[in-house]
Image 1 (tube, rainbow, N blue to C red):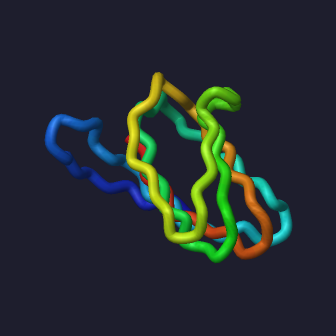
Image 2: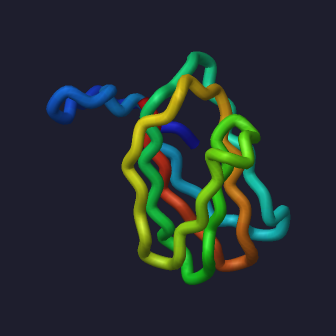
Length: 95
């Protein structure tokens, strides 16, 4: 479920969507956005590692351990692939 929100943090791209989910049996979630995004904020809310890939680009891949977070800007992207194991969970905001 996506929750739309409007916020501005300094001169950074405003955050537009909030997506919360847990990886259960599929081991991979693909989040697709209806417009290009440039900011990606993710929190690993689970107990297992979580890997993300921006636009399927292997150079824009990183792994977040349980409790870790990222808040960064990237070239325009329209999807993010999140993968992990059962127990991985996330909270993602994009803008």
